[in-house]
Length: 104
Image (cartoon, rainbow, N blue to C red):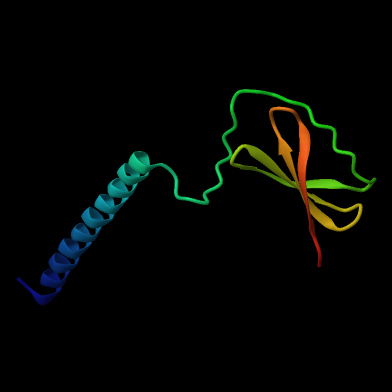
């Protein structure tokens, strides 16, 4: 066997081992996350199958930049119409329960 064929054989074995190791890490991570749930501080975006209406009394020119679920509240990031801000909304009532101003 030539040195070129030997190098290809060694490379194939090494790559096979790396593929097996990577697959084992992915499977272990999936099993771990299913067993213990999401990591603390992880924001999940799945909401219960409920709809609600919320009227945001904000100045003209305000736009919703992002919405995220934070525990049992919705965080709505607003821009325009003044300083950027985040509103915390209770999905059960649609009421604004908190307001955070983001100063620049």
